[in-house]
Length: 122
Image 1 (cartoon, rainbow, N blue to C red):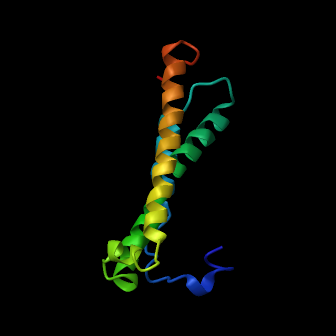
Image 2 (image 1 turned 45 degrees about the vertical axis):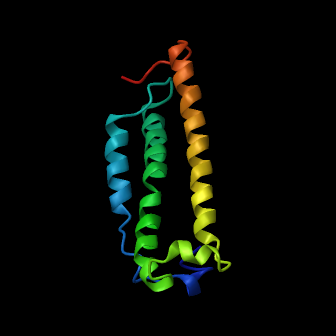
C-alpha cells in the first residue's frame, strides 16, 4: 500500500533496508529449525518461515524510523507528546500489547509442553 495507494507519504531515500536481510535468514532458519508435527515437510518449513519472517518483520520499520527521526523530529520524540503528536506513545503502547500477547502465547505453549500435551522440537 505504501508504494501505490499511500505513495505521497513514502520517502524512498529513507527506505534503505533490503528485504533479503529478512527473507534469507528466515528461510535458512526454517530449513533447519521447524516444528515436528504430522504435516508434510513443505508445510512445516513454510510454517516456520512464516514465524521467522514475522519475527524479523519489524527490522525494516525500525530502521526507517531511525532514519526518519532526523527529518520529522530531530530526535525530540518525547517533547512532541505534549504538543498533540501522540504517534510515538501510541506505537510504544501497541508494541507493549503485542509483546504481552506473545508472552501469553509462549506461556501456554510452555505449559502444554510441560504437561506432555506437545512435544518439544528436537
